Length: 437
Image (tube, rainbow, N blue to C red):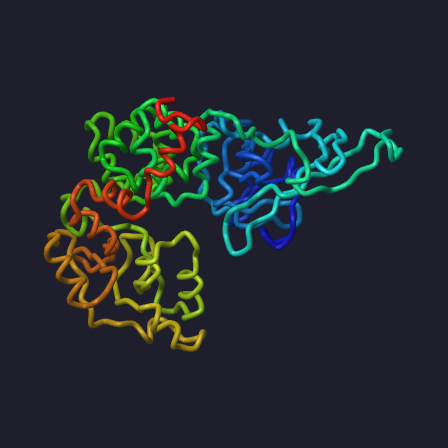
């Protein structure tokens, strides 16, 4: 079964072996972690609790699960080995939802939860709980046979979701769940420090990382400082390396070094490299994770990489062709291919044959004014950065350049004038919640 192709019931995941891409066993699934939501809305599946060889239980985000086939889970190979700690807004599906008594909305009768069905949102990496397999207790006006079972929609039962009238951080999160990271960041900015810390603690690592990237520096430092150090390291790992480096550079040197040591080595390495460059230079602003392909890759390979949902639009605009290795710093940089050119070429064409070598790359010490002029002059949204040996170090995208050109309070001004961020804030003060906690 390919992940997302059909529904998975949690009972079929219990004890299933977890493998990395080369076939080495990482551990076994012991539970599924979900975040319940207000009313009958299907909960989000955050990840899996995996027991590794040392019997330590770790957390595997669903974004790092690439498939479930023939009774096994396949991961991307990047696994954080820190011990799993359940957070207040998280629910263990096997441990806490099975055997619960709930009520069927249509009939009002009590039933027992036997299993939970998960499904992937089409075209996305998000997973939801959408089905509940239950057993009736028998009796009642219709005299159903005791032990009769049925599969119901999540919204067809009550007793599992969050209560609408709740005032805690979990319900505040549910209220703002549909907001884009930039909008949620503006909401957080206007909360009291106490409530801001509560909401940040309740967000999962990936969501908090996305929100932190949109917050002013002082808010980032405040929130990170109130997290446990291991959690702070996890969130930094989930951030884009350039944003993580910018945040760490705002911390005292001792705190910065301690968090870097707690991060996984493969996540800390690009951040350490970025910290060696001046802030307002190409090296200080670049991302170390552009799309890099070998010259013998095909146009079909390139388009598959461009289609990855989590990739930002500026990074998806072009691919960079390099000799191996393909991780930055790469082998020799050969040139780039814009995605519009990819759309015009047959799928089997090698990218090395259509590479654009006219657009010169920039060195990492290129200052901000030169970067701005370069992007404007060539009408591009990202630019390659190479070292003295000609290896690709990363790419600077137009959104990162704008972040450094706009005034410090541009996010708050945009929230007032464009997003209407004060509207949800008013709802926190009109009796449905309180911004002061």
